[in-house]
Length: 134
Length: 491
Image (cartoon, rainbow over all chains, first blue to last red; front, top):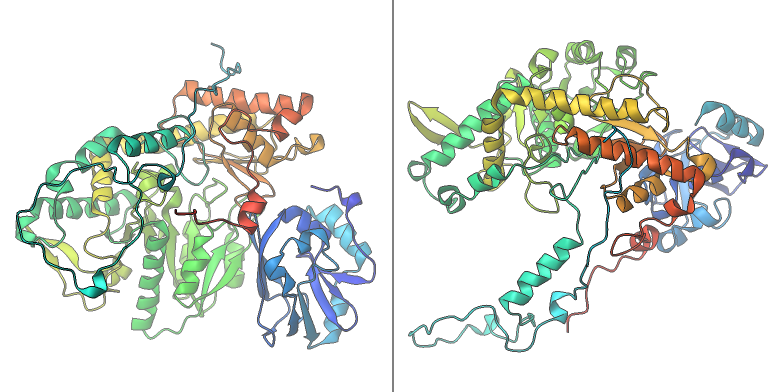
């Protein structure tokens, strides 16, 4: 696994303790962090939600399956799914190779934009990785 | 030999290549010759006539060699130590096979009436009684066809109980350490999952249940010892809390091998438990073959057991179908009968020694834990039950991962332990030696693990390239999962 100092953790995104990231302006794209994709290993399947589904903050909205395990995806803020990344059906490895770009997972319309403020910025997330033992 | 001197167990022999069956044979070849029938030929109905599949034409010898060659590529409990945590890969005594092969059992037809199958019914009845007694519960059903099926059966009974009593319960509590099939079974019964976080000592704490338990909770699914190999020390108090709010408790019996004769699940308050006979009672393991996952219940769930049930009436055994609250059949006929014969044979041949089996399983795991804990990271350093969980944290500085350690063991002649499970431990290596390994074999395994730790420092490339002694080298698991090829090219 990568050392924390070698992780690609972009500025300008918000992160949650379950290692999802979310964009801070529309379109509100969501994916998993470089830490998460590295810990999971090569992904073999991404289970995506239906467009139009609504979830509360912290609800499970899909799963990531790797050669090691199956892990749930949790929505960092409440909202409605407005798009899913269909490319992941054929190429789940995009989450590994480009977790913040081609490997995005869903787009949502947050039901309460103020919830974004409860999430961590990159500095706080890096600190969380260093101290929490994940 | 000193306790942990490394001695290479794995060696290479001549391994023969083998084609797929339909790539072998020759048109017209056959493994048998049928006698002339003497009856006039009759033509088939049109819908049944046609060319049909192109089965391979093979002699008996070709088929025998085919499977014998394939078997030499394999590794099983008859080959060597198989310390696959959470799976209890114990040796399967051959007397079990001899009993299951007795013609009276092997040739019994499932449609025979009760008066012609008294022996079989007696065996089923006695096995149910033994299983219930071993865990301290009231009665058992042998119908479920595998562990996860037993889980489903248990949760269906809990759902039926709540329905019958007019309770509207929607949730099931599941600890972080639960087997992956637990949430699936709960979900198939219409329940949603509420996760119970693991306490700092590696087991559930009463305070966590106090926070989560409410009137919507149908029950708790718990594995004890849990999948970290640790005894759920606060379980009796936890069960009391669940019962107080009208919930029931399903115990996943996957780890029963640690506690036979020591823990009384009835007294602990468990309402239903399943058995993996292939884990605890030495019937052959998996491979897609038949299993059995009997369930035992306490008083509360007794009326909901699957039916029909074998009952003893005087000195006769009969089927009782008059079970108004029963969840009904879980399996055609009477379950996987000849797997159950093996479990029965094991219980009878062990007798009171079943308790010793659990004691030695626990002793062996603790012995391995103590011998390896200085060399491999042990996330929960406390007495374990029948399995112990390490991680690759001490080998990571040399870029050696859990997977490399597992593959390195193959070259040394051992089956790898379970890896990357339980999920609550990052990069877990879960070792379960069982009671059937001798001290010499366990010492050889420990020596192999210590040798791997040395290689991680001195020659990590020998581990990252492992296995090299096997017929095929390290497989590309990612490509296999992303682009599976599940068919052959039939000529």
